[in-house]
Length: 224
Length: 204
Image 1 (cartoon, helix red, strand yellow):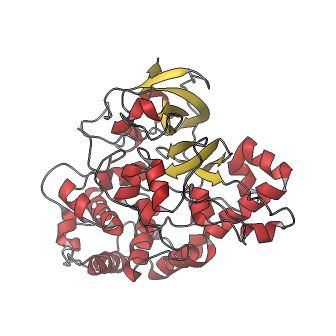
Image 2: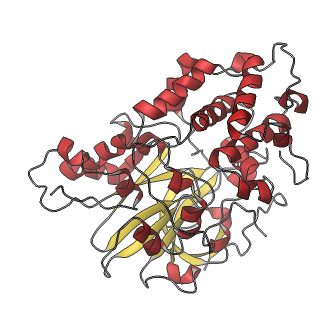
Image 3: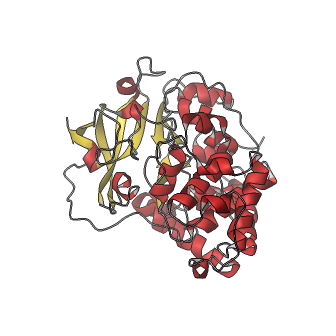
């Protein structure tokens, strides 16, 4: 089975509640949660795939009960300890004030604009050549699971596992999350936008012509 | 890496979320790992500098400048970077165009991927379980939650952001706006219309 975060297609969630455009944060602590997370990421001790995996690895009871930024804070606390940046004693409040070996990596206020503007592009050169082209018929892996690590990170949602679709667009070669989330290297490979008829994914699609597109790595796909 | 065991370091933090954030910020600051002034700078960026008006600028320019529209189709990342919109969570951009026959809508079912440089921090509903769960299976029912009904001849294409590619919906330019310049048009373009949960309507 997949993890609790993989909720595409799930029943029973109720209405989506729109909100006005100017409402960026709903509480003061949400702002701090976002900023603490980004600033901690700048210490360079993990990548985006590792941080996504940390959040989705929260116990299902916590993932379900936590609000959005609570998940971020919990994932961050787990990561800081798992990567050896902080100790559990630090989290429990018993911290000392000795200089930290990573302190010289601290994100300064002056560096914020440059760091946010630079971003973290995921395209990389790869030795793996694309084997599909737009219009090719493909089928996704039947199991929406990481093939390298049991219970590991993957970006193939369960609802699209074993589904037949068509290559819509080639995005070039990108870092493979299934590898990068587990310190196994970036392992870049071809990435495609793949289009699926809604009728391939759902027993009762709303409309016969509706479609869903997912970005999928070449190793998720086989010819159909 | 986090492991699947019942022990959770995060449970050492206070249970109240605001205090939990404060506790983390305090210990990281005391260790010299974060600078509170940098946090303020990050918050200020997303509260006052980066938001959906950037995307609206892109949309209005695409409506009024055929060369820019073509540049968006050829390489949207470069085209919007040339306008000054690039950065975190916007490193690979694709613009998808609505037509009378196809309506595009964007979701991230696995987390909350969203084109930050063009739309800012995603709204609460975009990150909600309800939107993540339902948008791919019943987009028309979700659109109804936003008061939007599509014509029967319009197919819906939902884009699930499963990689680092970020999608911006180019809504259809409403009729009766021929005389408007790009600035006036941008004012009509809502955030939701660029996610695909809204349409752009001419002012009456």
